[in-house]
Length: 224
Image (cartoon, rainbow, N blue to C red):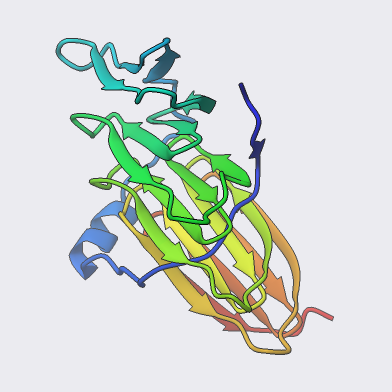
């Protein structure tokens, strides 16, 4: 069933910056990681079931369409995902039910999937798709026809997509993608991640995406 590569993904959307007071409050809050698995997924012949013992009722169900094939399913921490040949079904401990996102005409099945405890990202031929534990549903960004994804990294609470044009971050504490541009000749030399932040180094800058703020920061520095 697990036909997708669980690791990489891509691109971005709108920069969504949380209010200053929310950033300050969260930054001062101790964030424990990793998260114990709080949700599970069961695939049956005609439906998929999210099992969330902490929620009243314990299960949330989504019917499969006639002829629909489940290609991948997985759960970690607060997030879970089912990929079929027609759509994505995602759920978090904060959602009341399954969130659905249908594939577009001529869009490929997921090429890669990355999951943390509070985030997940999916790459297709046309879009980068994300789901955060605090979001109301999927967030997405189109991949430019001349844009090339290079690498995806993920920690427990953060994920980042590196392309030849931009860096895209997703936090498990804020909804939506946050992006920052990189220069035409600014090559990424390394990327590393810890549970709550991602560090990207180019020949002239260090860029850091923090899950506690949901935003990128940059410092000019020589790494040679």
